[in-house]
Image (cartoon, rainbow over all chains, first blue to last red):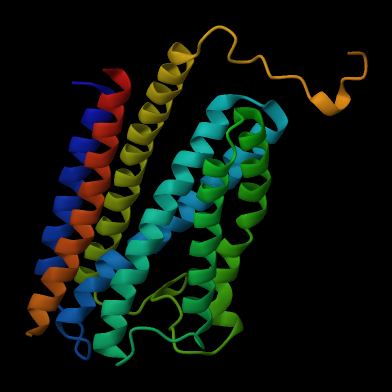
Length: 236
Length: 34
């Protein structure tokens, strides 16, 4: 079994353990069954923050080293960040509809800033697709990846900066506002989805390497020769 | 719809999306290696 397959299989087992704990731990007195959704929502958003942070780190390292592996890491991590942001928003909307009576509110600082962050990272992936030259693609996306990360602290601290609908975190340095069984279930899910993120990241990097090899093998002699710019030709 | 069904549905959709992404990666890697 290859390293990536082992990682994926063990992370699936960790997620299964998280699922079992999520459905065997007690529910919140007011939220009822819907409190179980938070075992997905909070870890998904944490993984998204981690992914975008890693994209920024890889982008900055690429700007200094110009090594393709950092470009690949930035792209892989951003793609996963977008996936987990979408899932974080989806689970949050289901929970919000049930507990707040509203799935979405543009006036809420956390929701609006998360949506903007998602659109910017979809833009990051679109920018990569729109730039065929690998060097230029890496440079443009590294600059955007390094700048776009400012949204992560903005999204995280938005609940402290603006008193709108979304609540502040339930796990704080002075303790957690939930019984220990619920806290254990939540922390196991945080660990399991972080591990799953690492496994998927390695799987995505493997795809990027395989596709780069294929592109290099498929290159024909003369591919890099560009036609002359006729406007610059004076001596005909 | 009962609360439990909505919660289970949310879990199923979330896991299916992740599984779908993993399957998509598997197919892309196989296509690139064949």
